Length: 109
Length: 248
Image (tube, rainbow over all chains, first blue to last red; front, top):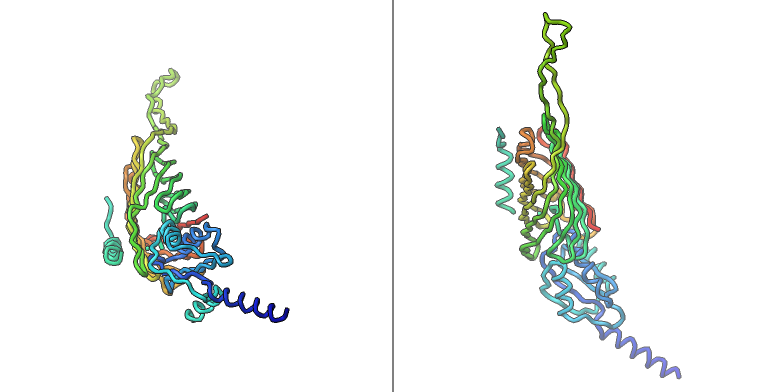
């Protein structure tokens, strides 16, 4: 029983680490708070989105999704375009939203 | 006769060279925007727009233009559609071309004075009675149209914009041309307070009243955080200017 429990835990952790934790997007044209508000509002319309982080300094938009859900590139491109901006690159990463926030705050200091 | 100040040309040149944290008629899709503008001795204006898409917004506005003499009050209520004609998204900059137009309902008060001839009362034939001055106020209303546009360029350190706004009716015409140039003393990020030092050159024209026509140069301090944008300052002749914008 203990072995089964350990195996289950290992498999669960392995599957969690294999999936993308956040989606990073390089976005052009962001220069002010209104830009960030618009992009966040547009992305949050997707029910898979849990959290959005926008960094003007890094031209970066990070999205955290619900569970193991992914959002395809076409949907991301459309959400950014609907807000009036240009999506230049997308990457799925293992970094958590907290790690992204900490990284941006550290870089700002 | 208007006088063109050197400052007006300076700001115009700066804007052309650098060609924004400028108030926008469209912020983002499904957003509502409220804007207010006050220029002491000239005009005050309030606008409310809703953007169903990221490139179009529609709404209403009200403008009160200060007059003088026989035309003390001018008001315009209007409906307007704003259109983002072109946007350039650069890596760390953005440029926009906005155009707008709509219909106006203009009102103007007019003081009408006339002199009535003396009435011979028959009591005193040696001294004629003086003529009688009579005046009354009347309101002239007319429908009309409005049109304008704005070109702006903005990074997180500099911005500039050129804007023109024209209202025309059979009662009167009114035009405001504005050039703005701003510098941010520090670079802000999302959710941080943005501060801008702004130079603004404004030309008021139209036939609302002779005293209305003027060129003004003003210096303003602008604060911008999240959904709120406010600025206030003064013209070189000490008149207050203030503007605010709220995104809902």
